[in-house]
Length: 404
Figure 1 (tube, one colour):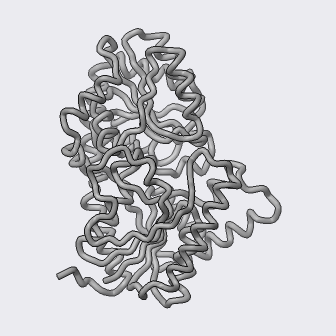
Figure 2: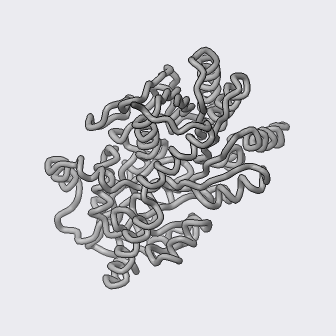
Figure 3: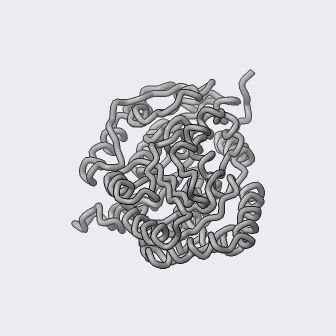
């Protein structure tokens, strides 16, 4: 069958970001014809060349629509609307697909998919990777000039118009069921794929080691976006407290985003805080494998409690215990499976104290590491999830034809 994927933020594992979107279209392309309608925004972030930009069986339609995490809210909105307009135009002109997949963020990408699906009489699936409009509303990015109610109405209408909604966390699924009780919803978390570590050769591993400290025994890691929601000032405050209290700890941060200057400044002031360059996804996973503890902080916003940070899945898959600050499903998960700890959001003292206590308790840390691997294997196997995703799309389209 032919699957059209509306995905504004397309990238490969050679970029410093999550590997699931690429893994999904690569899996779909093994059995079906796939067209991904996207932009060129992430091409400039490529830091390696181990993966083809377009997997076999996948056709990329790329628009020149700029986007960067450091953009202001108005510039992001322009980017979102620009992409949506061009995606709708292409979607109405392309050969008619059997099924459409629309992935947010942002909500405008999913709205474009839904509009094309309605006009062309094609069933569509809405993949919810962030809760919009709740996210921009709670972050203060949308002024309350009569738009809030309209956006919430539009969100619910999109849920109701789909053949199926796919969420990436159980709390997101709960949100969708409240907003659209009759919608068909399935949670398929990002998961992780430890097999990509096989693409990291010895030279790449040596390069990683050169960024670290041979004299500091413990490595505490943050690998993710340096964005506003990630509570980077809180993270850096906790890092300073931790390395001031223990001379055997190195805190490493790798990523990109609007708070990169703060990270650079902290690293310049303290040798035990290191800013690593943005890494391709497999190298970041290798860094998780080296770390003793992974930090997953966020701002204190209700909507963020439902999110599904890729660094959480990658930490567990690499056998690295985590400290989370989201009071939602990740808190429940680490407690249930004994693979990490929770501290309240935006509490740098509590975050530093917890990290210090974990590093001092070698037996508890070893148990948590073992539990992390087992939890990832049992609950977040990306291969199994992508097979389920493929079957779901085939079911929506009413076909199961595969490539000859």
